[in-house]
Length: 207
Image (tube, rainbow, N blue to C red; front, side, top):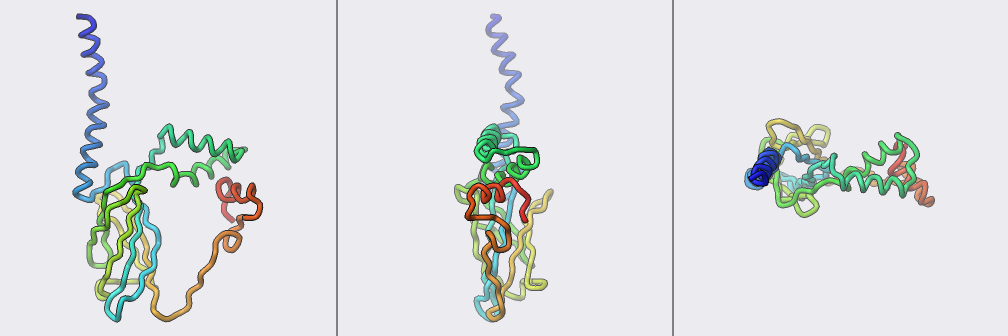
């Protein structure tokens, strides 16, 4: 009898935790069909360049990334601790930069989901995400539906509570473009010295 009471007590203690976990999972099932973003998920958009299809339409690529930050994850902490030991982190400043720059590598990517964005005058459904949480979609848009300012437009996810924005740049058929490398061109990396290369990339302020 005592054992039965203990089992019931344990079940009652576990019930709130299981209920929260189940509610979270069910919310994400709904998101699979609706395109809504769960409260613990984030969306990052990468800047892209649009090109002209013809005199009236633009080809606009959209590249997004859907993930859960998992900031309290044990695996995340172990990964950062391991990399910190490898790079011989010396102080709080280096640890802060390392944690910030390791962030994209230790998140929980969300696959097979989609989001909707408002670009110009219309709303568009993006392609579902792949295993790495990334989604790439190309949209052909009439020029009359676009409102670029200085050759650039901002779009945002349809979400009631939060704002996730991206940018697209419109490049005309004719003009001047500058294409540049980053490492040791616009950023001091010291690529030839591997120890300094890793330190400048993960442990120090960019300069």
